[in-house]
Amino acid sequence: MSACAAFAVLVVLVGMGVATLGHHDAAFTAQPVTAVATTEAPANEFTSAEQQVVQLLPPGYTASSCTRATNPFPDSLASLDCTDDMNSDTPDYARFTLYSNLASLTADFYATADGMTVSSCPGGNASPGTWDYGSNPGHAGKVVCGMIEDRADIAWTRDAQLLLATINGAPSLDDLYQWWQRYGGASGSS
Image (cartoon, rainbow, N blue to C red; front, top):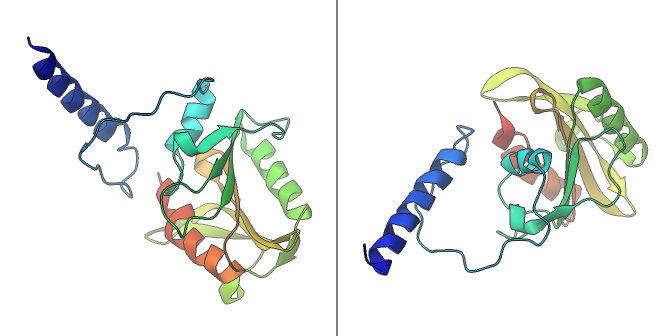
């Protein structure tokens, strides 16, 4: 087999793998492979728990935009700090943290809320409050809106996935909340 033919087969197989691995959620659609990545893999590969977090990232964040958190909650399994790398309306900063149990997740959600100047979420929604997956009503997690150091901030949980997320960096709480409604909760439905 020629080198060109082998490379073409490799690109097709990688594309099939990406489409298969990326299809963990109906909210995501597989994209065809149109190019081969030219960047090197990170020097410190993610642990299996960190890879789980990567699989739960909402649009706008990818493994290449994330680094291992240097000060995660003590009871977490994995925590990644991520920055916007795909589109302009993605919040500048996010932290995604994975847990092994709901009690630790809930405790750290409320610890996060305690570190914020809490306000009602836009539209008068309770903060802290609960949310669901719109198209699949039922408790999906908790959400809190507010400010940290004069920056709009939203923290939420996806209880079934044992994930805590915090985002900030949008121009306003309204902008941040609109992003969260589009991507934050919806991308993690199971």
